[in-house]
Length: 150
Image (cartoon, rainbow, N blue to C red; front, top):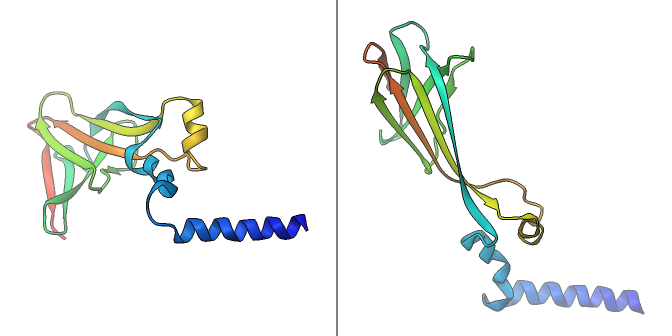
């Protein structure tokens, strides 16, 4: 009898959650919209750049879509392979000239304030959501930027 009541209560609860109007019963999604128990954390990473192919070809810019979006290929001095900027709506890139050839990557993410906020609001999702990512490239005047049209 208890098992039958448990099964019946499960169906009633599921039906109430599915067919209920959007109101007080659906406050669980407010954390997705208003980020309860979270705060923004900004991390800045500065890396030295090395030319991609030769001493003259420093960066490669590829225009995407209508040309307002772009992906920049660059190589960090300590790496052998080229890296690329992330193509997303939250990403901005800026090229400036200066003496140290470097890239500054500033990433802002949502993180939980404490352990209890993580327990209450994570619901098994441990990924952090990126709010904004900024790439600031500083390259010497002797370096060239190659633009690739697709």
